[in-house]
Length: 623
Image (cartoon, rainbow, N blue to C red; front, side, top):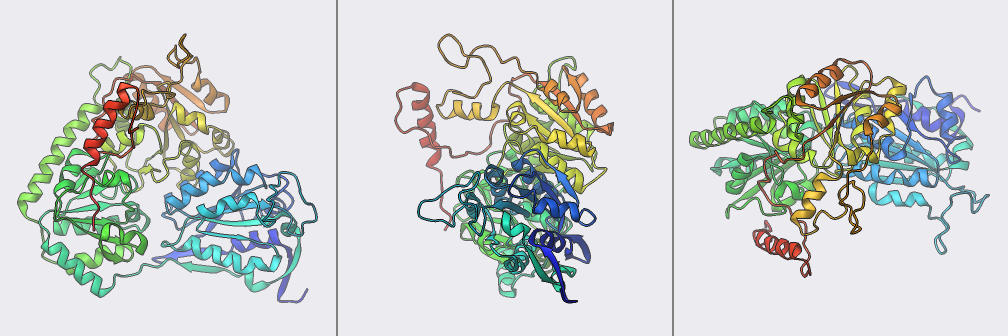
């Protein structure tokens, strides 16, 4: 070996390369790949596994229990750090690799970086077919890892050691680029992982990937300023891009200067503190009354870092002003051009700062300001009603659980959720105190995300109280990473709400003519339906068996005490509560399109189709 090369296996070289990669933004430098989650099998145990043992001084290793959950943990970590630092996930070939697909889709949908390193079949075809190999009769180069192609922002199969060099560099480029990032997959044939090569020393040199803050084009900025000045009822829709670019202060300065109110998507909630007079809360199907009322009459909608999902637009029925126009500030042209908008393709913070400067002296009419502030006050009364319990000795409703948690958390706490009926209640009711407090994964709304994501957030923010809020349906999807939390001493808090089934989908099923079919956790009745007694499961005992401290709360008073005790604990703690199913959340203020059977023999579906036809008539295509 010459003085300018180093003889290592491909796996050893990859781990050493990853340990020397950094991001830098605004003068702050972070490890780009700060650690690796792994479950080992015959596709990676002797390759990446051996390399991680040998490189434990430079690459922290985290032991996971489920491949999908490991991706969720890595995604939670990256989101907490505003996409400036990520983690890698390694698995064996076969089922270990395909278990990554759901997590990869979640990462890419939410524009969050994660590096996936699944094992793959022999590049040499020396063993063919090998254990767990999918044999494709006409495409011999296809492996199960190809299922990761459509959910990855970058994919490569490294079939020779030297091919790792351009592949690894491209992988880092995509992970660090805020306009491109998502899941990145390097499929690693197990024989190539163990193959030695003389690597150039420059491959292992420290490398910094600068995260850009592109400024808006001057012509686009001029057009944007004209649009804002001409608007009489402008409304900002804040998306996750506000948080990713750390643009919260720039947004507040823009709002303070112009008086334009802010409604937030699930990913954007917390862009302003809940008590800022211009913060109107959530928008869309799960939005507040004041947000959705303004959205219907807005003549200019200013989207900042949002993807405009169907929940945000109420499936195209929300923005009803005949003269409404859109101005989208986004770092990706793909998202900026949605809804036929005028565009500002730029970093959110930079773009807001330039807009504020260019709009100096401009402010919306005081009557408009007074109107939305009055609406905000009315909604606060709705929140208080939903949170308040008339009897502390009663079984709490779900919204009263949120009220009890609201009374316990501090500004620094992080509340995590993804699926079920909780996202709607949280979007409408939660009072976000800081930019990172509200952590809702609603791009993919993936059941099972919350507990592993809490581990990633806790790793990224040690000392921060972290809460994973889950219902019984979500808990049963992926409780396995409780074991990892106990093993690693991560004091995450789990609020486990037992309501005996899928409450959210049960309600949706009833609304759309499905009659709550298959949505309850109950015994079969004599007629064969699942309408018997609730199943006698004890999820609190299950959490305890996995190593968590468990606090059972039967009343509102007991719940408040349990939450306070959990927050003070230094161990992983579960607060278990069975809730009163009586609906106490405010109803939806906007529609969501879930197609209903056009013909049906049962009356509930016939009535549901009539309601559907009346709602879908309000859909618009914004051109």
